[in-house]
Length: 559
Image 1 (cartoon, one colour):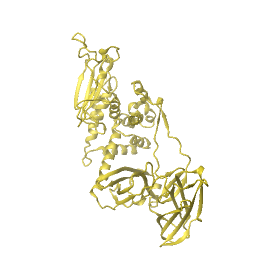
Image 2: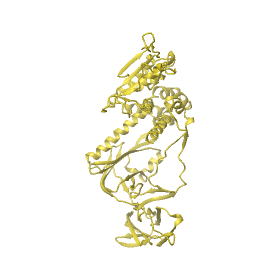
Image 3: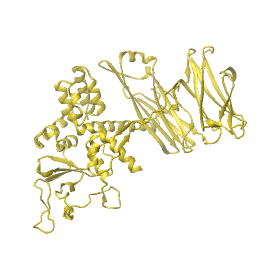
């Protein structure tokens, strides 16, 4: 199953990389929307180093002034020495294009060829082996030479962004049938002109490809055909995507470094809340909501838009061992009217982890990239055990709103026959599934048909409603009455005194035909009658047949 999942991920990766394999056809419509100068820049000059997100932004620009500003920032972002007027990255990139056009012309411009593309993306190889004439080696004796096409083998010791076990990457270019075009393949053995014959001689001079695995006790291991395909796929991935992956890694190192240094930082205020719910496989589910006031986020104006970027990092430790870490990024691109509303707006990040019951240290880092401000929280947490089959209730989740949503739709499906790259893989002998499901990201605060907008600030105005949500687990069902009975009470306290009851205490009956391990519950209450100050919401749920009452509380404030 693991191998199958890896293969599906690889197929999806190839699907999203189609534009790189077929630039003319995939971007034909886009070219019509741009002046010739910018068509050439986008689809020829930077075609192998621009990311898909950058491409989409560039295509959305309306004026030449905006495009020129984008191009300037594109190169500046990649400049290894931005403090100097010379951009080494840009100069090297255009040198590689010129070299490719001079040395790899194959009836089409050199930059369009496989060798030209690889040279532009990775530069000259560390080792180079050429067999321009083909026909080397012998079948059985000196009078029977092995038939071989002209070929070149380029060896790289390291390719940034390549997440594979091999420390030596061999790229083979074969001039099939002396056509004059060198095509990138996955194995030097594909240069064998006898590979389609039916006699054993087609394998003479060729062994199964081997790879040296760093740290392995075995000197030679066979290369997995899927791994060869993955190498071919990854090296043809746009360097723009790899560049953004490396940027994300750099951000992760910075955020993790803040935790490791245990800095006491509070220059960027934020509010955080986490609750404990029943999870799967005896784990406890921990939804996390983090909120930043719009007025505390920095923006840079770019033409008619305001750009901001905030990073979130979570690390959970048990003792000295890190049991969980995650990093995400919120990018904002606001119009003028939205930017002006930032003083009353807020930005929210939502996440969910599943943990074993126990004690942990929870770290949260929020980093504003624009003004470099950082917010940091370190707090101990104790994750409770919520046993399936045992009557209990969850923590209370305070919310700004709860919406009903339609039934969850099935995951979108792509038919493999519509993806040309997958057809090519199928022809190579690898089995391709008929359809591929595209995974949808789960909302940590969606429960059945309820979608909750959490309120980690736990603050309301008198014009608001107090909105809350919680779950009831495993009520006791009577065999005789064929139902469960719950008595539910919602109250508001101030300084230990009950000052309001939300609705009337309700005796809820759940028929055996409706039996479920999890019951979603909650209520709304208008706050107009309450004066500003701090309050406590109290939820009591009694299992009547079990004669057991469980109480949960949540503090909130009326401003």
